[in-house]
Image (cartoon, rainbow, N blue to C red):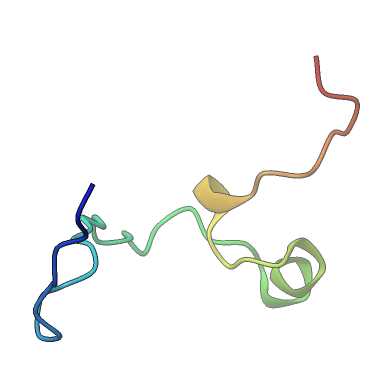
Length: 50
């Protein structure tokens, strides 16, 4: 199978990222502990899998 040349100006990928709304915020000290200011983005690692 022959490899095709791709233009260097072609985008690698396209993404869609919705705007983060500035509501449901952690207090600053808690945000530092959680790693995010937004409560909706806080997803602590639970481990274990399955």
